[in-house]
Image 1: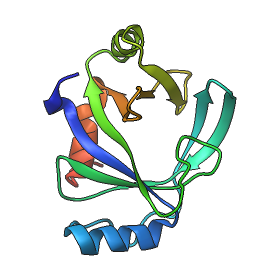
Image 2: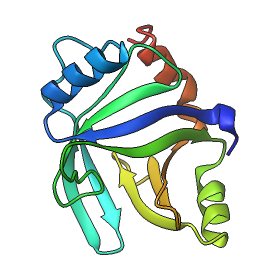
Image 3: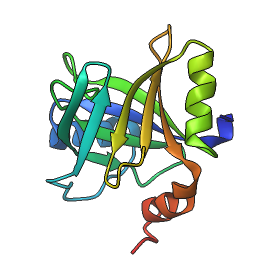
Image 4: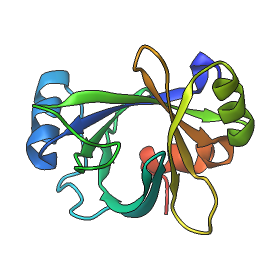
Length: 154
């Protein structure tokens, strides 16, 4: 992974609407108004098993790096403690499987993968000794995702 591949910072909040409002007010960023009320239904695979979860995440209009605000989902990697917390640094990688293997060989844990359909790994969460989580996304999603974030998507 290269630094220029990092495109967002994920922040977990207990309540999406109030979290978006506070982050917008404090950091001068804008989010879709109204925010989404439903999200992606994903299969979350961790070392303790599999579970389905509805994940609602909202990206700032400003970026990169974008701020991604995610509604907390108890019992998943998107668990929130008190208040909010920085959840991950997200980046695109050319070859997701190779990057996961490289990081695991360096002692970084594959914390979770997300399957959004078709059985393909769409996102991987990696976590190392410092507790800094990486969200790795396949590079082929880069242009479409960034175009959507710029409001150019269909």
